[in-house]
Amino acid sequence: MLLRSAFRRNWFGHERTGILGRRTSSFPHRLQQRERACISRPPAVLPAPTSVASLHDRVTSHCHHIHFLSTSRKSPPDTTRTLAEHVSEIDRKEMGSPEGYNHDHNAQESFASFKEIANRRRHQKHFDPEKKVPEALLVDILRTAQRAPSSFNTQPYKVILVRDAALKEAVAARAMSNEKNADVVRKADTTAVFLADCEMMDEVPRVQQLFCDTTNAPEDYIRDALPRAIGGLSVGYAGGWLKKTIMYTIHSWVMWGMRTFGGTNIDFCPVPGWAYRQTGFLADHFVLAATSAGLETAVMEGFSGIKAMEILGVPADKRTKYSCFCMVSVGYPDNTEPKSRGYTKSARFPFEEVFSLDGFEKPFASSTADGKKNK
Image (spheres, rainbow, N blue to C red):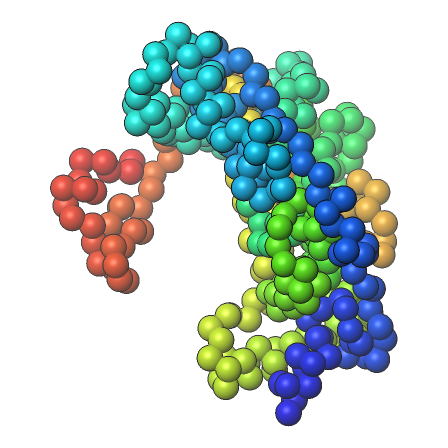
């Protein structure tokens, strides 16, 4: 009865009466108007590439967007072109490729480019404080990083870019746990502070509107199932400590009941675990995008997130909503420092200890893994 009542009342959602008897915020706009909201737009136009690598970078940053428009939105047949058609046109016009361009070869070149970026990435400890990152490049990196995946496209995060000298000094002096990290913040051109949203249920109406405006998802899914799913996974309820405690307790019991009696295998992930998962994807995209642009990065976790948020003007009532996931300093290396000139890749555990095939600690065939030692 408790479980049936929980789902009837929709404790994980925003549509019906909540556990405390309050009617929570409702779906923001009438779903009947979604036809007008989902007006189609032609696919994004890719800028002309100068090489196979640059083609990969640009197509990669746009491919999800183009696929999304061509499959999810209600686009007229005469204005919709597939990603393959875009790439084919670019191949012919900009690279002089014939009609029968080998896309398998292009994929190999693209993967080689990505491997080079992944292997070039390192933790930089010495930045050149005199060399500035152009703002246009920084914005381009951020827009590329924003293509990172997130559960139900919730995007439960915010990022504060610290570039002002006084703010950098304040963060370095008051928020960093050691002088090495403080020196990185002082000298790097920019430090990105990644904030994970631990009260995601506040933002459910915005996510519903995004689904309404940009997808063909069924109306009952957007209205009912989406809030339940986000609530069940994020456990991101807003309110005072008493309400959070009550909701957290009920949530854990409901999830236990679902696993025990309902056959559901969803694990219970306490706050801020779910929000950290999503923010991690964004931070990784940011680091790799910056590396591909010729910049160096330093990912740091030795800091006081509360002090950092206070320094950066996060309102007091929002400091429980957000949790500081990590900081990433980015800039150009100081080549006068001996440790910045050339480097040895940090070691990795043996491949066969990390990766298994079709079962726990079941190794890949030796011919697949051997000869590619991670050193």
